[in-house]
Image (cartoon, rainbow, N blue to C red; front, side, top):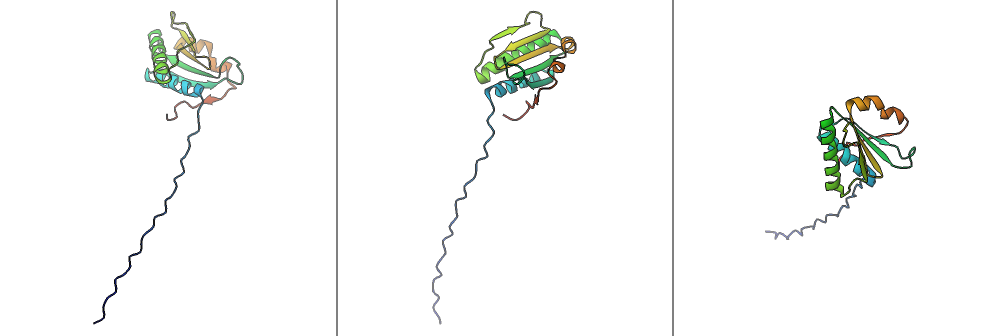
Length: 144
């Protein structure tokens, strides 16, 4: 009888495949703030939420966040939520706020971003998008 020779086992070599990390495009601090503010307005049922890139036409700021509230009470709720979320997530406080007593058009100024919260009647009257019809509208609903 023929003797069986042991079969040498071949070592299986796995090549390490380097995974390329897909780098997310870096977004500016202003855009981060605008996204946080827009999402906060959305959480409080703000409507017609728009982010306008006004940096090329205004020297004083980069982005406007514009939101509409159905009444003055909701204007206050949105203002409070925006301020809270921006402070919580980004550690920033507004440089100034205006219109907080009347609560028809509240402006929250962060320097590089200005948040406008309008009661419906005030937004219809001032038509802020008509003033800035030629600036890009920014998608604020992208993932974190």
